[in-house]
Image (cartoon, rainbow, N blue to C red):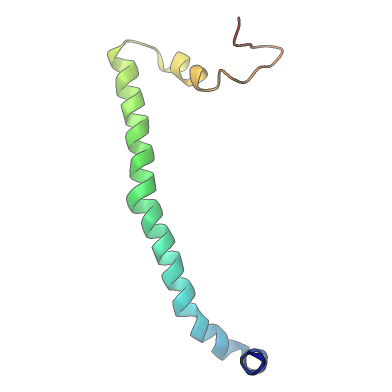
Length: 80
């Protein structure tokens, strides 16, 4: 392990060039999961909520306030 560390200190450009493909692969995997799975799920949930509120004729303003109804302040309370 110390030999590898010394080699990396002596030749930083070469060691970074060797590490770059692995870090790029990790980043591609993370962004692939974000773009292909998480983002469509979030958009589908938002669209579902919008369609549901449209069908039951609720305004979007009331629906967005309901999401944060657990937050209390001196101006707004869940009991008012």
